[in-house]
Image 1 (tube, one colour):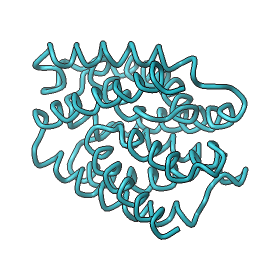
Image 2: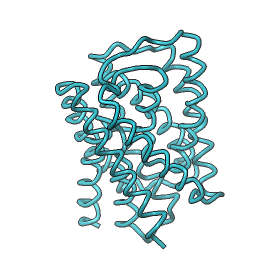
Image 3: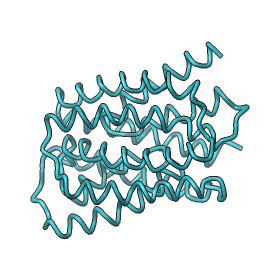
Image 4: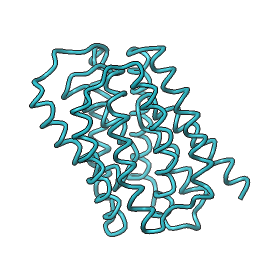
Length: 255
């Protein structure tokens, strides 16, 4: 058990660091948990990873909130909707296979990577903002989608949130990452409520992982704010490519 905790803590620290910058920490933490603890049900392992994700996202959100001007009304609406949608997604994950969604996500990520690479100014500066009413409507609609996705599948949700805030709401990378953290915090909360009530959390692993994820997230958020949009754009591309490889493996190689 000691070796398992060490492996999972290292994965949690790395996941927290990456997730604080551009999201996508679940691409490391979730597979590491599934591989290290194969004797447990998948739903239980997914529930266990939500605790460290929550703590890491919390410290990153706090770090961003101290330095980035946030749109609290938009966040309040998105977070409330996303939490409910994530609870629904977590409920459905035990009933329906999520494999049918992976090819679609795989294709979308390839398009995101190509677009981000070709558009050198993508997310490097705030564009002209859209109307406040439209911003709330778009935010509410996307909160339903991303909330359900994070509860149902999970990995890459933070990166999709960053893409939404940049491409639809016209934020720069730093501002998008800051807002994404709060919505991601809400989706984790919704999932934790379901998994905790249904007994799908292994606290003996979740708590030490949470401490390590928190430390990694602290340093990741500080580095992102120190380096700025150009650094985050490059890091984002790396994470998206990693996500593509992960989903490609699941679709074409893994049996």
